[in-house]
Length: 154
Image (cartoon, rainbow, N blue to C red; front, side):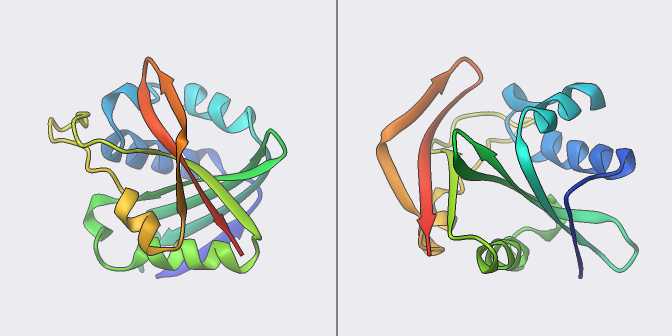
């Protein structure tokens, strides 16, 4: 696995990440076009990307940190073919090397549906294993998702 750190993404990289996003997240969170995904990225500031690529150069993992409301937030995606093999842990640990705090929203239920018709499995246990604190009293309840805030501090 090769890891690439960058503050910007090419349109090819964005399209590969959008495809993983749409396959791995619930259908309610999908981006139908590259422009929609680009708009999501452009709403954030202080971008830092870590891309994981396989030996053929295909993106199979993405860690994205950014600033929102004066806090350091993140998103992470792992292609289905690489899940359960330590790639998510590796990306998260690489990000922690240069961060003092990470905040995220995590869907904490297992009843949302992915594009292939399977149920989205909440990754909350993964984050707890990686020393994130679940802030049960801080929730995001919007039409497209129900999530709880998680936080990691060095």
